[in-house]
Image (cartoon, rainbow, N blue to C red; front, side, top):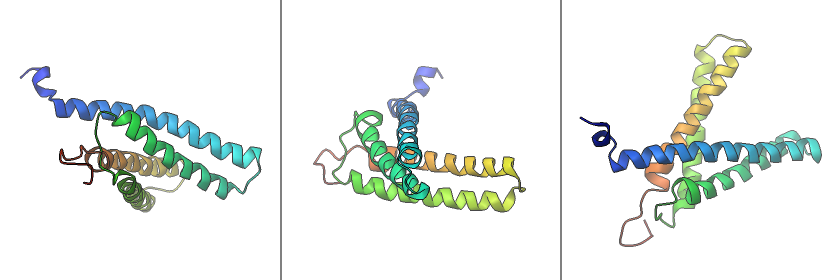
Length: 147
């Protein structure tokens, strides 16, 4: 079986979306972290408030980048913003579960804390991508945009 036969249009779409998702994620991280630092260090806002504002803006930027850049070839349902909020919440719940589990099974220490946080972050990123690809920004039915 040739590589061309393995790379079906659906698989190609998935891989291109994953690559774009990574690029958008780097940009979104830079934007969100810059806002956090500007509010925390520049305006001397409470660090927790600065973090919350940065993440809130980051979620909005992430949605826009996903809609316009990552999944741009798709006609999505009008329910995409609400679905995105649900997907973010589900991905974050998974993140917290993975973090809790990792902290229970890994030894203590700074390196292990980094490993736990890293595994939680990877679970969040992967879950949000899969939910976005197959549900939030899935192709709308041809009959309309209400799906």
